[in-house]
Image (cartoon, rainbow, N blue to C red):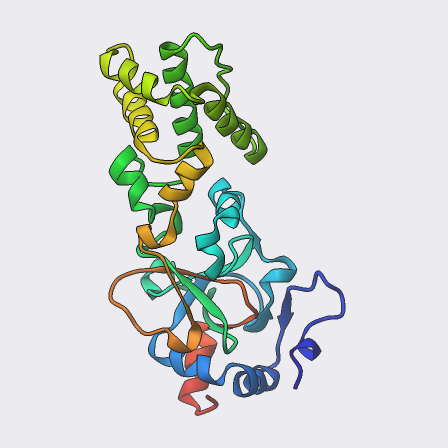
Length: 275
């Protein structure tokens, strides 16, 4: 059976309802090894839809509005991970859901890559941000706060006219990073001295600027690349066949076609020996 035979001819058909027979056929032919893993270390997801379906993220699944997901697309170290552009998010612990009849078991097709967060949330897993800058979550507001505090700090330490603004889009955020580079330029060592002698900055401004200036990188983008490095922050990615049950609560994500079956249906099928 070809996978394409399960997917509607229209390219925006990203969720295909399956009959029990078609679900079991796909499970046997396309997700046999993955199902062995799922029986020992299942992934759970709160969702809505039919009891059983094939979800194809690349067609139209969750599209992230978080800038960090757009930013890491440009970081080579994230190339070994599933895409964060369109993906299926799940959890290793059933307790992360609210229970009820809308909890699904996710069974990726064989050979799918699984991204694994070191903690229970992707955006709360960037420990380098927390240790050095004090942010426990890397969302859009965190990046806005970080870059605007740096704008204010540089406005006080230099004679350069700093255009202070809060970016509202990812492209504006990239422009704000470029402005930091223009202001700092070749004045890094001078700014370090001025920073050490100044008491006009807030604690946050001083902390952010000191950390930025202390790194051996030439641009703000490269600085963030270091901060968001997956290995430094403890992220990992494996083929589904190599996934093993781990202690703790972890968010996972998959960018490949996956079977979703309601947990209640999955249990019922097990009880009557269909699986």
